[in-house]
Image (cartoon, rainbow, N blue to C red):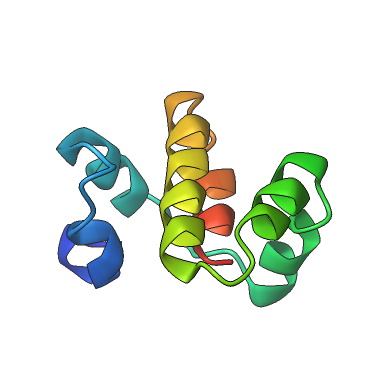
Length: 85
């Protein structure tokens, strides 16, 4: 994926460093909707999603922070899945 093809919310994010954004752009293919749905039952993701019901802004911020954790562990695919929830 080209850097300019990153979704706007990622390109404009203050949470990700420039290097992390470049890392996200290095993915060959985005996870499928089914692959994204599969992670919502993981305890750490499930808790995060339920903690911010009704506060979309906080939810998005915390999803980006979770994705950042995965990026720091070089789990780019998992980071994308979290970002696409």
